[in-house]
Length: 116
Image 1 (cartoon, one colour):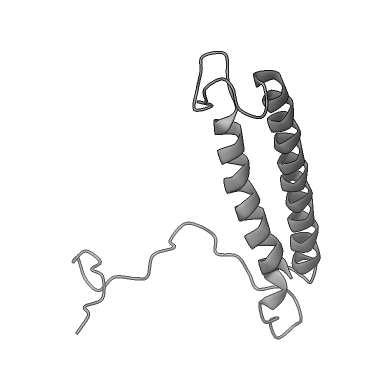
Image 2: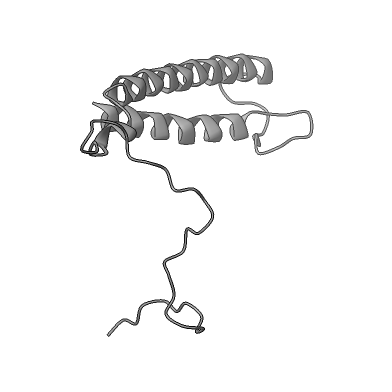
């Protein structure tokens, strides 16, 4: 279900970008088009505005739907719950932070493992 909504969301995003770029702006923009034709400039502007509003509302609706689906899927638990408990039933101890590196042998620096 979440994948279907995500695909619809991505398609709506692309269509919304195209519709916004096709609108006639004060500077001309990509909303090129000559005069004449079936619709006048004013009618085309109101039609494009309505189409833009429709796609914007649909985009926001799919955004909210994805948020709700993600919250429902993530409500199952935390990553910390996956850690195995210790023998006495408490959570594993966190390292002190003084020496988080593995012990080295001698005075040689630590090297990454060799991939053989």
